[in-house]
Length: 102
Image (cartoon, rainbow, N blue to C red; front, side, top):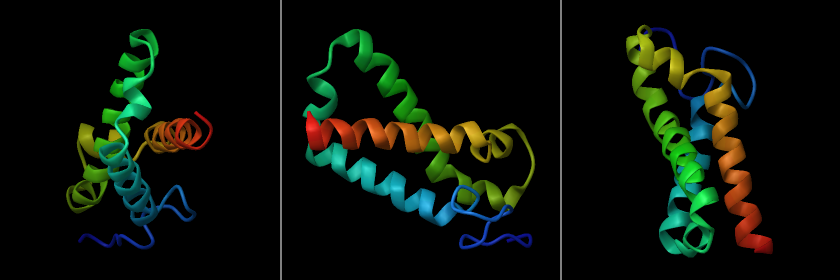
């Protein structure tokens, strides 16, 4: 890798490191595989945007370590963007909230 590491990342902190984001994305993905009714029980008006947000957030989290090697381009900028990482935390929060209290 070009001076970047999965444990540290280009920026300090939890949101800057790709490894905790990978763990979070993997946990949410497994949880949705085990309990798909968390999204299936929602009305389509809420489910469709949430599925789109989740697909982007999980995809960006899984792709980010691969883009660290390249270090340039549109995908690298979007996968490392703060809003992309916050979308993952927001999606995980919605899924966790529905799983625990829904």
